[in-house]
Image (tube, rainbow, N blue to C red; front, side):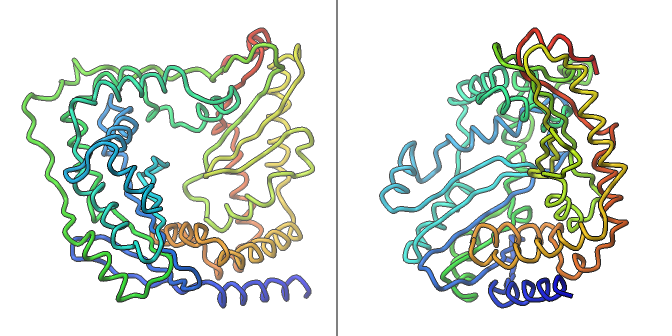
Length: 412
């Protein structure tokens, strides 16, 4: 009874504290979600453009990475190189572009009095950025270096290698094959208002938001892809995709050995079940020395061993621990406890604007979490999701550590 009361209290607090989402669309297809919050004189905007699998031709896996760098370093029709950075710094406006799983995102933060100017700068990047052929080779070289020598610690590089889909992982061949025409075609496919979702949060009302978005992005129109001047390479002459790599091994001399296994969240896993597994799996006592984290839809299991420990022994131990959790699953008490914690955490979203905006984006993209579905989630559905996520056939394995220890790993 006490747990039920806590859940109801947290649920009522979340409904009372969070601003109600208001939505509208522009004639060009841009979808907008507004979250009003007038306590602070700030306006935030997150614009997400989705990238679909068919946007990247075969043998061009490096196209999103190169396009992201080209777009981020390019001039616009109205602003020369460096002018945008100076304007942002002088006005105190934050505008950042990032490449995320499934798309490109721009994040904007400005004072309420600067909202027109800030949205105008965002529109300038989206609608008037010039793909400059003169910087293509410099950015291609930067991408090559990123692929050949990834930045970060050996542990961070191992995680990056495991979370990338081998079929879409940038390769040197794919980067070398990209032409200016490929970049322009990719832009025409992706930088389109009907693919975009704009989340607004802050000190503006609905009518004010409609005026702001219409003035800044109302003229945004899709561009037609360029007509090919030369026929694309035939299937016979196109660079062949690189062969799938073996389990990544990242050398880290003088260290022990770290074994990691990763699995992406199953497509058919309900978002509510995924949320509770995010709370239940990490720190589970049955995993003992295996550390598990769930981040951005990936389950990461880590087991560290001292120098001289056979890699094959650690990998077998990691598999055994994960399989034991998979078979055992969770009990009703675990489900109830995690559900209470989830509702309590959800009630605090009103204190974090970015959390509210991420939630609104997830709902707009069709994978939001529903309070009603969370309350109706059954134990069987939760454990079925766990078994699918920890399916041994779906685990990707890799290791970092001393080169001598890495030689003891099995070939997968």
